[in-house]
Length: 487
Image 1 (cartoon, rainbow, N blue to C red):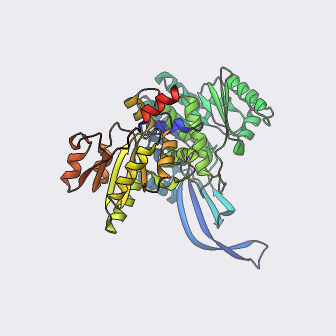
Image 2 (tube, rainbow, N blue to C red):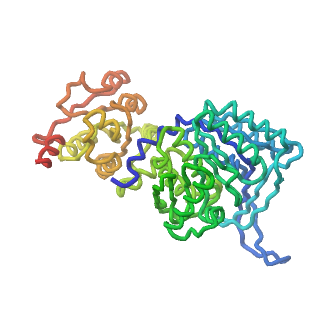
């Protein structure tokens, strides 16, 4: 089992998270094309434009990431009374499960960042923006919205891009409101004076920002810890999560406890918005009941996912699960799929006239009996999908000492069998929901069952399928194998 394998069963908790996000929203435009010549007017490349896209940036990208993780954010920000502001409102409205509070300031210009990209190489960024504090009246409106909404949310996120939506007075008032409601406050900070965030729960600076704010070196782990502890004391924080680029992240707690979390190895294409992904994952995790350390570990994985994508990218919950499984799965990786992916494959196979078989189990230690079961099942159909109990469900069914192998390791072994076409990990105690979704033509279990005891037999027979009881291999049992190992 890898260091992060236990995080897989925590990912579903992110979907229960309600997060209140306040900060500077912006419009990220990407102009994509190709370059095949230099301008005769100046020594610059000529970009032949092929397509343009726009997406939410700044605090809006934090919200996009929260939605991608399945969380339910409330979003408070300010836009100008302009076309870009209306475009931001439209994009926010297109996101699922977001409750927006977009205030309009006729005196502001909505921030637009336009990036010109050739292939995966960014050539230029052009910014249009107003960089000044919002009026006291609008700042008061923001505080009123936050004060009313914080009770229903698990975490308050302040996403500060130093454009003026967050003022010193409103930051102090919002942190005080969160304290009264008993809710943690996470801040993605900007500037040099972090005392404006005094009383927040956690700050997420990068290495350079940490050094500048603490006025200390941050080249070594010991220096990062010392700088973080100085900030914690100065700003009355509970913790500092510092992003360290290729070195991963550090989480330093008020107690002096520190955790250095290595980066997930990926080829880096674009770091745009990676900090937004970190704070979103951290916030969703804490709001979903994860510890600060568990949430930080998930955030490290999420950051590794988005830097491998081009543009202001999002890490989805399925991305996290796939990445966490990928750490343990060396062979047969493409066979281990989500239910949605399995349904796509089953639909395609059915269009080809192929029959679908299904079997399931814990498959804790694969033995010859399991191999025989898979072979018999595959012989009865054209494609075989195997439902695999998650680690959590195995513990519920067989006790805290099981499984011996993690779900990723068990999936890896199953997927290496030629008789297995797909493996779907399911969190429930029985595969009934999985069977109902996949609608297999053949349902297979071992002959130690009777047909009436096979979960899903009535469903399968109801749509014209059949139940097959596979012959058992004498003397083969996972429980017996574990007992022999114990002796």
